[in-house]
Image 1: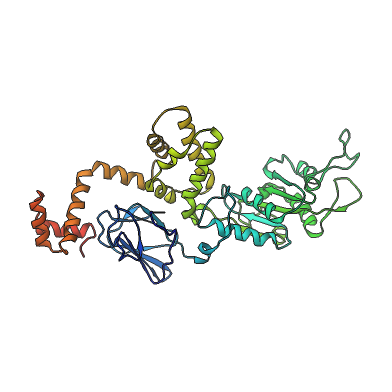
Image 2: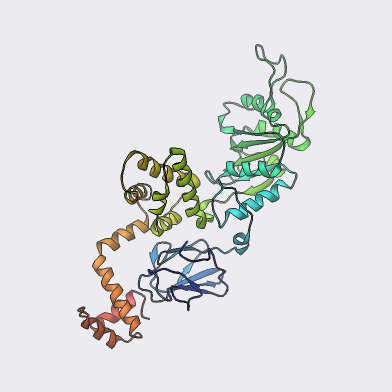
Length: 415
């Protein structure tokens, strides 16, 4: 997430980033120093270090004062670039083309690949992941991959008011079973030769899950109260946001399903900007407005704040809510896009360390300007304190060596 021709780089034994060609990963970024920061692996984790940059390096929102240990998934800010440390190169190397509605250039191709593999197993499938991770979109992709002639029939198990309702809705009702009730198809018959997607499987009563298990085992179907059974050609795609060993899930059913994990955004942070922009584009299209100005008003601070936000339990839905509010405000008021973005992000990410940092920098703008002048002078004089003092005094900024030593160390520019 920065101005470079490459979206990602393998870390290898370590990597320096900066504006200069001397950096191993070069960015066209005037907020970056020539050699800005380094990232290197260390005993299963990573070490991030600022290399005396003017504007500093931030790890998970906090400015670095020295070499600092970072975990996988940590967010590094250098200049305008927002970097996410990803330990699994295999995920980033996947080249499966996601459908338009599944945004994310980094992790989504690997998820699409996993869905393709699952569709070829011949088994019924279980999508497992937090709420809002996009399990319904994954089900739609699976249905497309399966290439069946019948329909995709979708239902949320949380809508069933009782076990009896769930059973009759899924399996249908035979003739004359209930007084005044005509024979009718269930969801399984409606999905014949196609796919049946049942979301929130954990909300399906265990008795009905075990009835579903019998269909999983032999593919034979009978309406409730009917004497005869017939084979249906239905692929089941089930989904849950509960742990797979939760008491609400029948273990014998879970054991017979091929499982696909749909990762939370906390595990694919690098995809967050793409997902937000896709949601913004869709919301703008639905509202009949041009969303490009809103997209251009988004910058690295917004993306960094979102990458660091706790989106658990909401995930993609949280990004869709932000996009929808931005579009709604733009549609009803002629406010500048920058003001709309500032307002919406202020409401949704009020406690963000990135926002607080930005406010502090604005309130201390003279301090920041002087710090930048001092660090630049120190670097341009080959880190010579006496020469730095002379250059700054000549420029109208009176300082002394002792003061320079203290503050250059505090800013991480002098060891």
